[in-house]
Image (tube, rainbow, N blue to C red):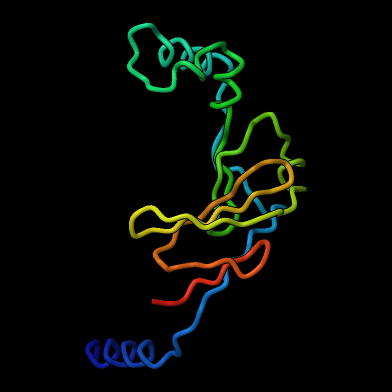
Length: 147
């Protein structure tokens, strides 16, 4: 019986028409903060250890000039909306994040994976990754053919 069900499931899946999936930039009004913002003490500790004289980081010349530069880079929390995620600045209020409107979409390749990145009017970016070869089909969406 189990074998018949798995064969039936395979046949149903194989008979579905191949098509393209459209990924649209998410409506940020549905975005949810999935991570917490770092405390001032956590940021200060990170600055002290990351920017210490014996730390071996490549971008210390720009990030470690002063605490405010480090804070602007690291004071973020994870936000999610559907398949999209982004580390957004904790200096934005939840209302500002949820009111953001999409401006553009970009597709970039890293090996066999593509990153679909949506940029919003408050300079935030939400992204998702896929193995499909996506191409932009408008200012805020992409077509990703099924494999």
